[in-house]
Structures are given as structure tokens and as C-alpha cells.
Length: 289
Image (cartoon, rainbow, N blue to C red):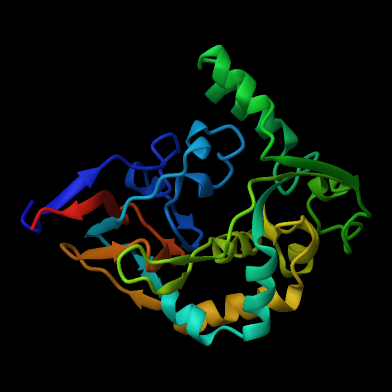
């Protein structure tokens, strides 16, 4: 209220909290790649989340630190306008000309079980009206493809987890085609406007030898469904890491983010029983001042 911040509803209200450490002690928590809090970008929710029908994003977010983590957990921000200025023109042109889609990736077990999709659908959609049940099953904007694949390299290594043996099939659900760029609604500046870094960062959960074969639970492909070159994705990740700013927030610190200009994320962190990271976020469309 002191800032004149006019709060609005969390656009991802149907999700579980991305900061689970607010509710319980999490000894080790992975980092969260740079992203926008748009409802149609909700990780692993968007196949059956009704918010996908009308994507929403609050103009501003206010991130508050009540207690930092024992180690790590720095807040990360990235200037989307700078990303456009510094990105290789050929990489940017390919993405802009072809657009891109988010793809949810399923396997028998990895990178996420196909059962997750059916269970998630049942939990989220069955209680809804019959109209939404039908629309969630027959959505012309989605494309579904499946294929068999060779087991990943190193599958026979005795140190590999047994789930690797099931990695012989993939199902990919491709969501609506979108532009990777956007014009800021106030300034008119062209800005980087997608969650590719968030999805690429999801590969960090695997050992190095499995990162390329298992991949992320969500990934980006071109609008026509073809694969974005590994070199282009690597360029995007490196440029992101070069330009991001990390903020070691202390109790009482507040970071205000213009979501149409800036992406945000979080470094991995460690907690203890005595020192547990406690952060909160609220969303707003404007300031009343």
C-alpha cells in the first residue's frame, strides 16, 4: 500500500507454489530459470489448465524477502530489451520467422511419466463443467506426436538409474504457436518474451551424460514443430547468463519487476532447520499513484 501497488490475482492460481520452501524446509532446491509468469507458460500444467484458453500476465510483480536461504537462492533478473539488442541476428531471425511452440515431453517414466498427464487431467478437469472437459480433450491449437527412440548412451552402465531402461518412447504435446518477441505496451520497444531459458534449465536435473537424451520436461521447438538447433539454444542460454543480474536479497528487500520488460528467476539454494528461505510474491496491474 505504501507503494500504491494495486494487487491482482496470481495468473497461475491453479498451480502449486513454485516456492515450496515457503511452506516447508527443503534441504536442497534447484534453481528456477529466467521466465515470465504467464498463465500459458505454467510448467507441466498447461495441457489441462483452463487458464491456457486466455493467457494472462500481470504487468508488475513485487518479490519480497523475509528470510534468505542458508546458501544461494539469489534472485535473478534479465532485461528482455538487452537480449534483443545483443542476440545474434541470424538466431533471432530464425526464431522470429518460424515462431516457436512450447512442447510438454512425456515418456514411459522419464523425463516425466505419461501417467502424470492423465492423473493431472483427472484432478483438474473432471470437477469442471462438461464443456471444459470436452475442450480440454479436443483442442485444435494443440498437436500431439509420439515416437520410439534408442535408449540413451550409458543406459547399460551399472551406475545409471533403472528408469533409464524405460526411455525408449516419447510423447510430445505441442502448444500454440507464439512469437518469441513482443512490443512493450507502453514504450513500444521490442523485447525478448519467452521462457526458453526456463525450459533449457530443466535439463540440469540430469547427469551430464543424460542431459541431451533425457532433455527437459518442457522444451521449445519451432512453430512448425521442427527442432531448434542445439547451437542456437546454447547461444540463447549463454547470452542469458551473460546479461542476467543476481540480487542477494535480505530481509525487508522488495524487487519490483515490469513483466513486459524483465524476466525473473532464482538460483539454487540450501536450507537448514535454523535457516529456511522465506520469500513471497504479489502481482499487480498498475500503481494507483
